[in-house]
Length: 171
Image 1 (cartoon, rainbow, N blue to C red):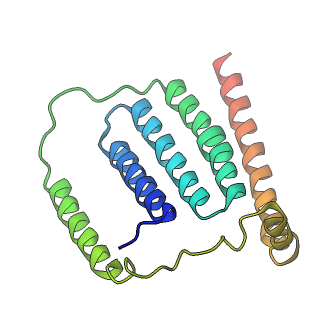
Image 2: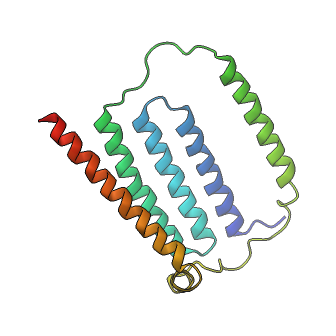
């Protein structure tokens, strides 16, 4: 079995991403959990790079690992969240959720075991460049693109309104 660079990069970034996701779920400190999420975002960007989708990788780092995670960290620090104290107690619902998660993982391995031998990821990603993404956004997906901008403006206005109300209530 010949291991190409693309296969090695896929497995490396997949393992790092899964490790970051597990760290996110198991961390009780919200700041450390957010840092694990940043690690996960970087591994997704690495997966994009292994598919020759450089633009998507850069956008992944700038938007998610940069802007979104800075906002998450600001909220965590603004709310002054601290990690939970005290011993962990076993809960039946957590045990059941763990068993269901293991069953789901087993099912995914069963379903995906046939895909491991196929080389389906050869070649460049079809829409990985700026020109291709811009053409798709401005032709086929112009209406959803404009609707996202309307939703983002509405969210920005709502955030400003909430912040102003909080400022006036404090005085």
